Length: 296
Image (tube, rainbow, N blue to C red):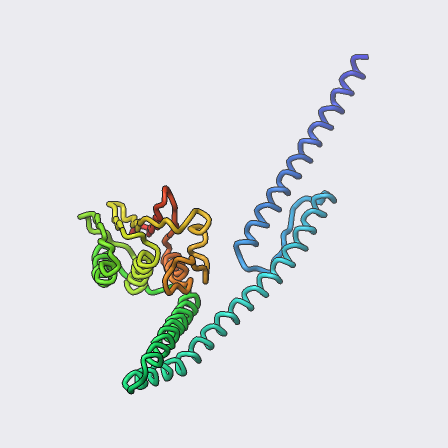
């Protein structure tokens, strides 16, 4: 009886040990599938997921994941191809429109020198305004497509304080003409980052231009000791939903003046190309746009 009991215990030990090995192998294979899937999503590779286990259910799972990876790869290639073609088309179209628009604006300048009736002058002014708006949109489209096609801008050590001061000075007359007296709080600490100076200036310019469109008459600009930058202004015409779309391409708020929906999109694209982060918040009727770049 005792011998039989020991035999049963021995069999149970063997079964438990075999089950533990089985569980370990299944756990290992599950991790291989998870890690393999994550790696193949991060990298553009044709290799498929391979697991060490021969368990039929896990092999079936790996096979199903590989099928989805093949479909995902095809969709990604189709998307990249279409995105590249779209960028090229936008660049070509905007480039082709620049020449006739320049000619139209030139003829409008000549017409304005001619004697005309009051109504003709008014109609000509309206035409000129529309032509200038179309020219501005064409330029923005061209710049946006060029920015997106640039993978890595050339970086250098940039004095952020100085570039921000220059940008504010360049827009100061336009801001005061709109009745906006900017309040500036800038750290005395020298903030330096590895950035593209021209791109940073363009980002600041677009943020200031955004304040011109949407501010209710105020603008607060802050540069903190850690290098974070905040543009804030009252904007009663906005809400949290609209603010969440501010960085979307071609999105405009009805209250915006001469908006084409590309300014903040360009700011976001340039910021991310240089490893930075830009985001917007809306609290108690105040729009805040935050800008942060990694330290040098």
